[in-house]
Every structure is written in structure tokens, then in C-alpha cells.
Image 1: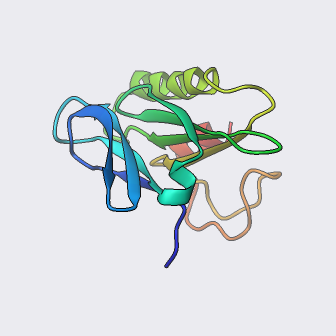
Image 2: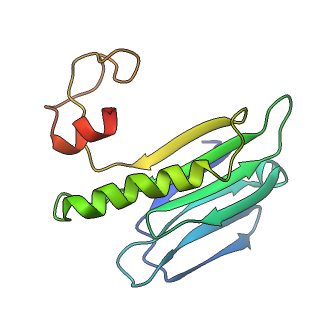
Length: 145
């Protein structure tokens, strides 16, 4: 399988940084313990377009790819689980907004990752399609909002 960009969760590394392994480049977030941490893996061609990146927290990292006609911004996330307090969830969404601040309004922005949310199986405007599964939960409602 050929992949250009792959979001990874639960690397369980600490710190933040980047590394090259073979023909792949990995950028990873600043997990403070060996419990979280995540990153984005780029193939050799896509990594050449990597203009900049910034670890916002152990839940959000943003990368900017230089492209034409528009640059591509990737915000990769790993949301708090349902065991976390609502204040942690609100902080997480504020971190996504902070990540968007690193990008320009005319950039193409992709937000991907694990939102630890269930959005249900009903269409919700253009946000949720009919191919989703399960029953919506509180985190799913927040994600849709």
C-alpha cells in the first residue's frame, strides 16, 4: 500500500521532534509521559514539501506543506478520552484553533486524527455522512458543533 501521509496515535514517546528513517520522515508531538504522543509520517516526496510544523501540545500538531496553487495545512489531533474532564476537552478544541492560527485563511486545511467521539449514523448537513456507524455521544455532538 502506497501512502503519502499517515497520522499515528499513541507513539508513547516523550518530547517533540522529527526523524528520518529510510525514505520516511516522522514529526511527533510532545508527550510528557510514555502514555500519549502522536505524529505524522510522510513519504520521501511529500516530506520535500514540508515547509514548517509545530507541536501545539500532546494532543495537537500542525504541519504546513508548500504546494501549488495553495498550501496544505494538516492538523493532526488526538482528543482526550471520555475519562477526561470537560475542561480538558475544551482546552483540546482551543488548541485546534491555535493550530489554525499557524495557517493562512486561504490554505487548504485538513484536520485528521482520533477525536474519541461517536457522531452517529444519521446525516448532519455536510459534516456527517450516512456511512457513519453507532449512536452519537456527547463528544460527537461537540465535534459536529
